[in-house]
Image (cartoon, rainbow, N blue to C red; front, side, top):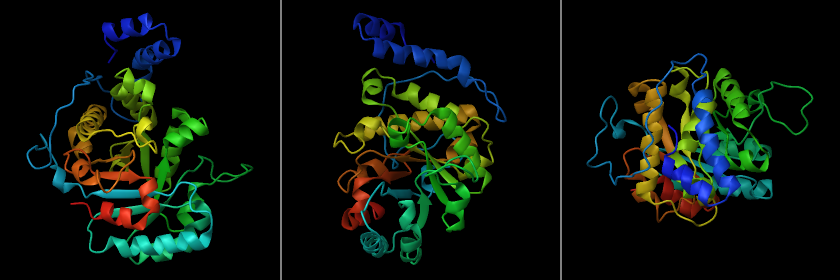
Length: 318
């Protein structure tokens, strides 16, 4: 689980205290990650930063489900867009029309003030809706907060949790993510748990280590049965809205690591059943090659979900 001696030495020689802190944090995680409650104990797997190219066509799952048995899941995150309800309604109508005959499961995460207005137009196309964030409290003196019961009362089955923008801009930590996971699942909603590394962490080859930390802390106390309702979204922070591209081989390698890690935390059958989305500047030009990878089961789409033509192509990937 620990970074290699070479990685540590490289950080020390770089005289970068921030980079050294990242490595030391990954090392310190070993003892904390094992403190699970309510889930089986697990032995930490070896990290592998090597990535092998593969495709759904010629790579078979070793056990349990094969990749084709997981229904693809595309999610659009509108973030704080658009600026008014009328524009939001028109966007919802266009996305509904663009779904066509696609058998892909689709959900749109709408700004909370627009959910009621947009939801009926998405419902007719079989597109689900969800909340972008919540707090773990049910109600109370929490100005500006949204509870799971509020989102559920609108008929939304999904909820984002731990998105990189919540982690960075609002300093949401792994403990809060875990509390939200329990609250979301406790109210019979389906969370998409977002994980992923920053650019500094990626350059230090700590992408899998960071994912392991966020998975282990975010899923603490979540049972195998509850995992049937959980989707994981791998979002390399450095590729979100930046135009930088995480190539399909790298994305597949991290997705496979995530599935292997879940197998260590729970078992292979649980891991085979979990859908893992990729998020990070997904476009019509990249979606086909991403979805050809055996461990990429869908995409969490930001900017392109605000363009109904682009998102239609993503929903109808080939």
